[in-house]
Length: 155
Image 1 (tube, rainbow, N blue to C red):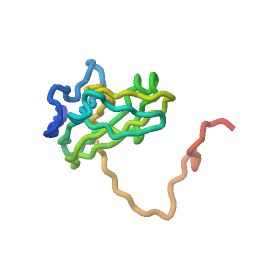
Image 2 (cartoon, helix red, strand yellow; image 1 turned 180 degrees about the vertical axis):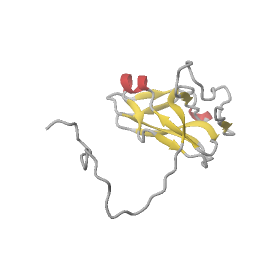
Image 3 (cartoon, rainbow, N blue to C red; image 1 turned 120 degrees about the vertical axis):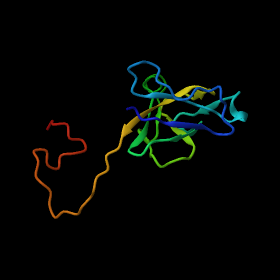
Image 4 (cartoon, one colour; image 1 turned 180 degrees about the horizontal axis):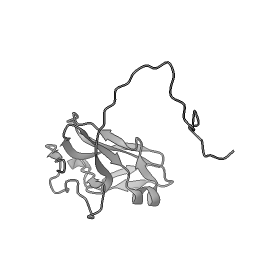
């Protein structure tokens, strides 16, 4: 059975902006759109090169226990304009009920315009596995060992 995500609009949100939706049958992520406050809708938002902004969606979500929503960048915005997430992927926990904002960053060399209703990110619903953590005096050895950051397998 698929999880059901309850979505509530903020009082000020424009109901004409679509709720998150999967654009193709095989899409893993549901597109989420900018839902700007009434005073910003006509002009939109400008995101300067190397600038970042919390872009409102006008939504709050109710995620079932045992799931999270991951906020991920849209690949087309990243490729064409350098627009990505400052905290990719972002996580929305099942017990969070506050406003859903998307923290965009412009890694491109030109200002980027965000219009009211633009698709700005995608939401991926994923199961959560919680682990227990315990102190240990040593860890089991592995073939990789301590090879980590920067470990390409080349010498």
